[in-house]
Length: 67
Image (cartoon, rainbow, N blue to C red; front, side, top):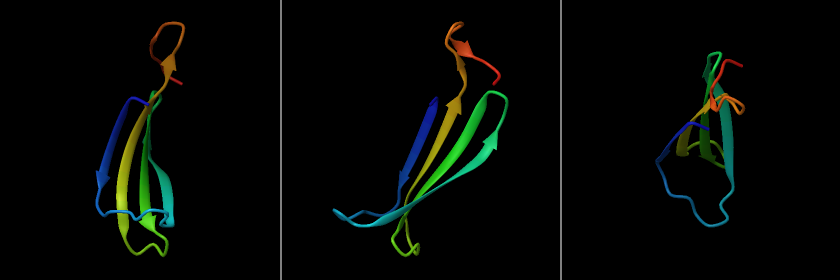
């Protein structure tokens, strides 16, 4: 993971049931951008948003690399 952003929009109660949804927003030969949503149990309120950027790394060369 090369970058993460989280936005907390509403508080969550202890042991509250939530739904988590993810989707792929974009991709290139080196990166993936994934969005995550945390919603209340009946999907009427967004509790938080998260954006994660994944970068493919060549472990031998130790740099980003086209996948």
